[in-house]
Image (cartoon, rainbow, N blue to C red; front, top):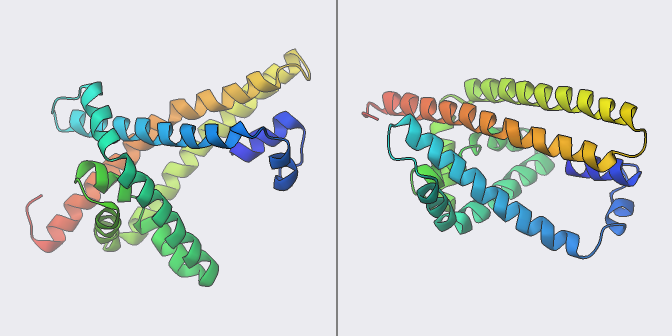
Length: 212
């Protein structure tokens, strides 16, 4: 989505990434890294806070940010490793990539909520998903469809409205609309995935005869 939005603002074919990248200032990539780390930190804090609220535990924002910050290095490593595993699986043999794409969805959840390391989080995610892979894939697909429908539907309507109001003059504002909408639906997606994660933990504990 980032490349498509940038291409639209710059008036470049979104499929021509080299042309688009050549037009970006040098500091853009530094900003991109900072934004990525900040996003991961805030995402982790939101997840921890939602988890604590669901368990009727203290949910102070400062505590959630501190926990996410302490786990930030592990989150970055796990995100990179998960991406590599999925990409290699998709390139070599399509099926393993799809399998890992689903089964490693909750690696960061395990790092933040179970206090696992990168590899431990990936292994934990794979373990709790494995007995319910098809069900998990189906629920994740439904979540993705709902979020994308809301994001693209509202974003398209608002962008078209802005473009009609001032043709050619509100491209940056239209881009901001997409970003704001994404920020609004992200907590919804996090909450839905957290509910699925907790359900998978209960199912895994039940399967192994262990009290969750």
